Image (cartoon, rainbow, N blue to C red; front, side, top):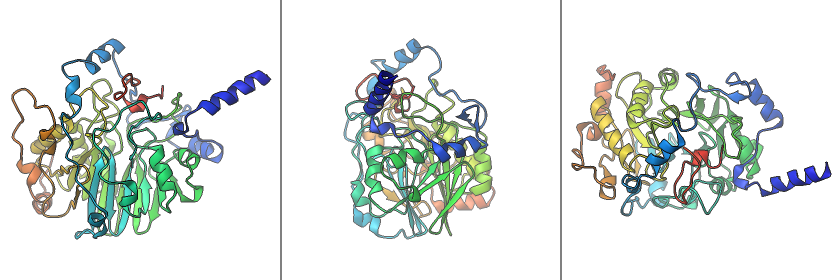
Length: 419
């Protein structure tokens, strides 16, 4: 018995700090009371979602390691990161709403006098280990310390490309609050965030920060950081409402009908930040394609192409078999088809969604491998039309209808090493 206890203690000592902590005590009791927790795990809306690659391992390996397509999953040159400065962010947004996409799903939202930081990942790799796992395709646009004070950090779920231990530890030294899905607070407390600074929410619960209301909304995904995926931490999308503006961050999610309910309850939104990258036919239930992302955006807006869609969850980490540029190109095509308004900022480029114009050029084409036959038409009416025009059309009633990483710089962090 003594030997068994020593072995157990030794294994715990070898556990990487980045694995975080499992919920326990009153936190676990609250999880068990959740209406979304059943049979020992959190349940997805719309039924069971496949959280591991479908098909055979051999089929997936053939696609993932194909010599012809693999080079297209990374830029062939330097990604044109916008040189954001503290001075850029120190000036209040003229419209009261400004978004700065930092790459992947990290977005600084300045909304009605408050500053909200979504899914901040400043680490070099989205992995529990500093020597392995997907690493950045571009540097962070500016140091975390140069971001200035943040009122609240919002986390969508606990996968490594959304919840980064070094970043959280750095933010733990500030006085910012943290809004997180139920159970995720255990990780943050392990890394130095005090319980009093946590706002830990189940779906449909809300918290107030300054003049903002932050609501955790459903998403169709999964969770896990350690060697075991216990499904004891929740995943969420987020609706944020201020006195004048409303925004939405999808986190990671497959498409589901619940977007319509979220839009009816909390929209319409001035801007939606929608996951459009790291999609694959091998995991269709937990990530959206650009076309599905546009469909979600329209659902959130009551079926009308109003507001601005900012595509997220792409261009920073190589997490799927598709070409590096596919999420951007797919979003352009989806916007054209839906006559919708999208923003295409470079990483670090601030923009105001309700201003007359927003960034609209396919900046990635200069460093991405061109498809056979060349690039489609670069600029579309849907991508460049003004927010005022979008609003006018909306008022007129225009209806819109991975396995564990095996290479040093590749692999799905959501299954590294969560089994």
